[in-house]
Image (cartoon, rainbow over all chains, first blue to last red; front, top):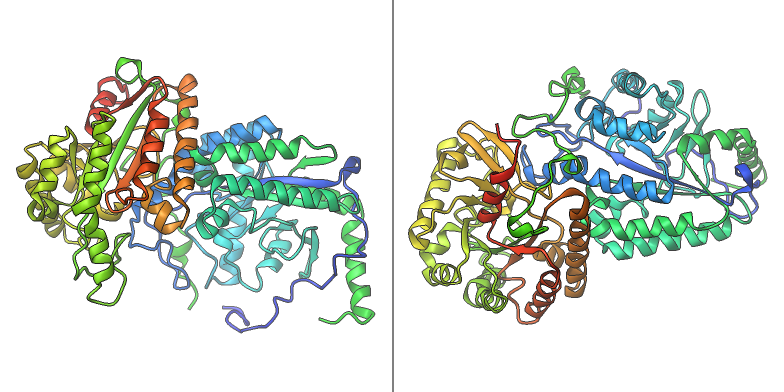
Length: 315
Length: 311
């Protein structure tokens, strides 16, 4: 195992501080105020996964058929409802993909690819974590993800969300080294921000915990109609602030949750509401990353953070 | 310690499911189902009737609703028992007023402890489904097959004897199973099972002892889950039941019949302040055309009668 694997630190050390007011202005293509992207986590949880000493996949001994089948609902029923709602509102998805799903359910992959959805990697399975992996093992996961997505969709991966948000300190370096352009694992900002990596240029893409249906439903335990309300309120505020400088709003989804019959309509109504506004860029993670670089925002934000630090901004 | 290289090997990474219990299937690409008399929705109401032993074990895990205070837990032992003494009769009376025949998932030990419960359920025209032996006897892969078979056969024998019904349906305590559970259920004459929460229609499962039908049962609109895990209000529960019904009902226009399941607990929905919310949910669904409320076994039989995916 590489040095530092278990060493405790007080700071992730992956980004510099930059206060919200006074930043370089972000301009989105066509002068849009806000980039809205939807990230469905299309996942495969294993029936009988091996254990990882840091995290046991299931609360009950394998097979945890209730939780397993609850997740499986997404791949039998929920994904179709979610996709239909997104089609109606004119949203393409940026799929946070457990890449083994390409092998298990190519039908779902094809339906997404036919709609020109983006695929980014969410690891191999959602029941395999990078905890306790060596750097070389983690590189192997990244290679597998690139190869699998390219083979099944022709796409070259641009984005990454670690499986179950498991990470090691070096993970961001390995992603950047492999050519990943954006990570979804950090929640410190409403604009894309440069990540401090050893090589390449990696962006932290605003994803979201609070807009994420798995947090909303499995952790916060709110009602579906309340979820619709907070999506609209989140949008209203970022839309307003986007008049000054471009913002990003992400809605991360899980078809096994949002695709339940009692939940789909509240979500559909909320994204119809968003799509009904002028100046909304309905886009994907890959396109936001490209626009961020093309507009000079990456370089401008990097310079602004260096300037802030050099002029008395302390960490 | 680094992970062994086996952690990066995936022996079940291939087309379809990573086990051989059932095939993957897209709910929206199946042959449409038509319920009897052209009904659109089969309304499957399943009331849990449960006994939580005072000395229930906590290993390997407790079923939801388990006693949680220091032993002896007067609080939850008696609160759960309320459902068997009072709550269930409130639910039965409401169902009777609505003229509904439904299913009751009953711990086998209830037949021995409280035969009056079985009498009332049967007299109401309802179906008895086996809900394991008691809430302390969870099914899991650490059980020897013989021990698990003993639990299953005892639960079924108690319920079959007291109800006079064939009892061919099963719901595990906590909806928990081990690797062998479906095989053992089929061996004991169980024809359908409600544990798996992955569909809005029945589907066929394979076992070593023939076929087992998986019947839909909602997980997140279960009255106990909404009340005791989500801490949401009764009004919020009713709203979600209605919303769930609306979407399933709407889908029947394009995709054929659906199952709307309504899992209840005698110790939750049978509370005085809750039972009228149940009435509101039932009234709403029953006000629609083409809603066929029936015991799970009859819904299963109607499905098997026209499903073309039979092996």
